[in-house]
Image 1 (cartoon, rainbow, N blue to C red):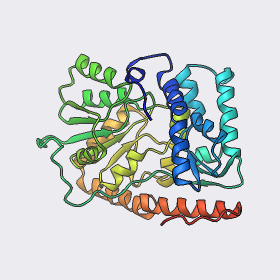
Image 2 (cartoon, helix red, strand yellow):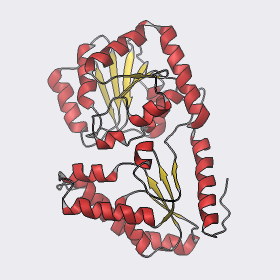
Image 3 (cartoon, rainbow, N blue to C red):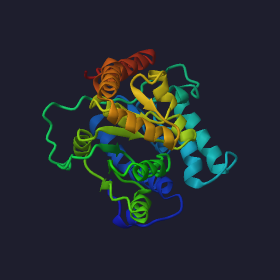
Length: 331
């Protein structure tokens, strides 16, 4: 999709919301060309602006409910539940769900909001890191224990609490990998606080991010409270666990559902709990190893991308069969 560079460089109110909408409209021509060339059997959609695709595309729709879009819409536009744009967003969401032959949800919180004859919970997941993966991207100086984070620098991530932890634990290295709209604020805050133990890598390719994870002694998954967090299924947590890392995490419903007693994850809601967990993990190798093994077992038992893809293919085939549509989906 050819988009003028100035669109991405220009900042406007509700920047992300409007750019997604502009990009979706601009992509209609490309999607039509792809449809004519490949004759797709299904169309998988995952966000509200993509509703426009259903106005001209004929393949059956599978809707992936991957985030609480209405909560995100309210935050992006800084409006209340009664705002006309929110009402429109809700109407579009209902139409997307109603027009779909299958709805997949990343968390049970989102699943409970859906009224559809064929809705299925398919959480996010990960793959184990390959043995002997190249770790040249990671900082070779590993004399200090390293506490790390990989992911977006956005409003739903509690970056301030992570920086508080770095401030209270100057003897440890904090490695933050990723970027986002709050990255500039984070960099300025690190400088303002004089946090010399914090390293910010900026955005890196996914395989490099996983190499950084291999050099972390502890991984963080700290979210700010809110509706977006309630419906989230953080990919990073499954990736941390698949890499055998101990994880200090906010008690997000999607995670407490698969690890209700904290056998694999160290749950924390306050900075005191975060600091206490970090110190306990680094002081007790046996405790750390036990949690890491249980976390890896959880991923391997049901949250690898291969297992999730197999489940997705099975659900799609079942939904299409109910619609009397016969297709041969590859395994």
